[in-house]
Length: 141
Image 1: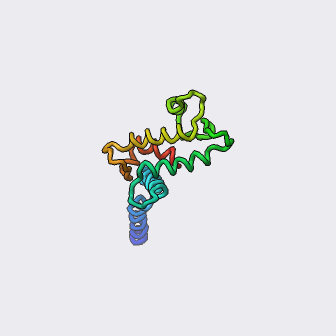
Image 2: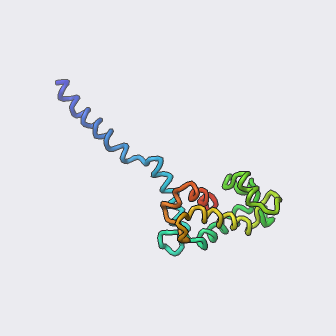
Image 3: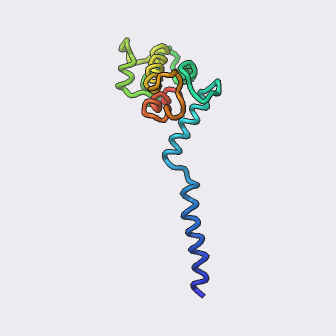
């Protein structure tokens, strides 16, 4: 009698062991879905890629919402970790510790070009999942 009772339990446990991992999102999937979500959000012409104009339009909106004190610039506090102190300093040619809209969009352009190794002027989901692509995405969301 114990054998009859344990077979269904073992079958259920085995089924759960095989099905549950497939149902749970992996870390890579979770990371890629973030890139794909941002791609869909920024891709206004719905061609499956982001061009520089789309990236800069999205970045302009981020700049406007981050620029809370309305002085025309964003500082490290307003950027909330989107840019490291080192990168902020490098993107700040007037060395005032802030980025104005022009400087922020120049940083977006620099990161866009770094994420576009084939130089076609468009970033697809694969390019956005690279380190350079993720660095750009930080400025767009």
